[in-house]
Length: 619
Image (cartoon, rainbow, N blue to C red; front, side, top):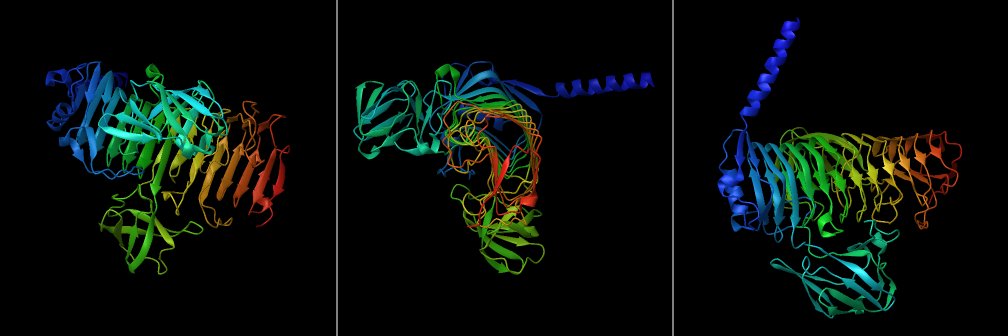
């Protein structure tokens, strides 16, 4: 038996070695792709990839700097979810209809110019990209340090090497590479402030870090890089802090994974983008380890991505995210969702005409033959029936017809949306750091199994948002099994208000008429976490069947003055089977209270007796 075991091990090792020897190694310098030349390498790298056959290859970049500029031969049309349309997407590296490729950049800096998409994977399989830093010399959004600020003027310092500009009385025009983009002061989330610790100050966010008569501000230059804004201000950023001068639009992702399978990203720093960080659209099985969306520390920058960090739309299989860092984003570090599509009309017993409800999500191949689809009534967002797709027929980028294999229910009309249930992933998010970003932390909208554990959150808005919306953003769908455990929610969490940020953990599906008897979400477990709030709200939950908040520790922070209008730790609405028990709540925690709304008090199993309960009166 021992001899057989040893023989088996040797055979296994020999098989691995043989498989490794079959991987062809390609050094890019042998194809004329040289580091540190600042030459445009877009054509050369794409020609190398296009010439690959079916064998497994490893493409190696000797460590150095590699530059990529738009090349008209690599312009393509893609409809990218949650991204503004562009006549064409300008692609730097395209991997299309290829398999079994590893790109190892060996810690090289890939530097991009103008609005461009650094990596695009299109119908690719078994692709690994690792050991690369993605950045721009001239970033596509600017920032400035506050030197002076009072009710009459704001003096700011701009790094003109990174953000060259022209000034005029009504604002600045940033002179990018082949682009001019205007900027002027604005209230709310278009002007975000960071302190020296990269934390967004409390009660700014969507509330704004500058206020006053912003329409009549006069802009002038003291000297190059030093700009003064004169006006009547009622609120100004703190001296020494940085503000983000947001201009341009989200038109290219940092990476676009499109209808691809078994993708692995490892040891990647995305220092900047002109849109979403990494957009995965209709992909299956994605693994991301040490993929960081952070501002480049060598350039004293506070902004990383222009919008979301890791964005997943309509994916399936397993999403694994481990040891990833997100800081300085203008939106959410992780967003996992599908897309609801509104029904326009029932055509016959087997088919409906639909449209895409959101202007940044159209032109999608929303379904294929055999997909399972749910019919959801919009008012209460209940799934009323199901169907199997027979065909998907696009009429144009906004409208399409779906035919089903069997008769659909008779009352389908414009009061319904459809959800594709075949493209819903599981997700495991572990050991990540979520720094201060303009909006929230993790947005989770998938019925797959989700585990969020051993992460650290310092989010400006809600650390975790579990939503679902068939009326505005049209991001599906209802969660069925989510565990949030062993995480640390530090004091910055929910220190500013943004859309849907009702608490540190906000379960906030947009349901016009929540029905406590038929909740939208199910089985949400929040256990063994630590919370450090300066304010009242810890958990907000609407329309959940099976919600537990158990064995967590809550310790008050004094980092900022409470400002939130709602003075409850827990607000729970139209839920069933709720348990709050075993939590360690220190004496000085604000509130120590629960508000129930639109539900029976018997649905709450409360074992933390130090918490008082209030029943909201019906409207």
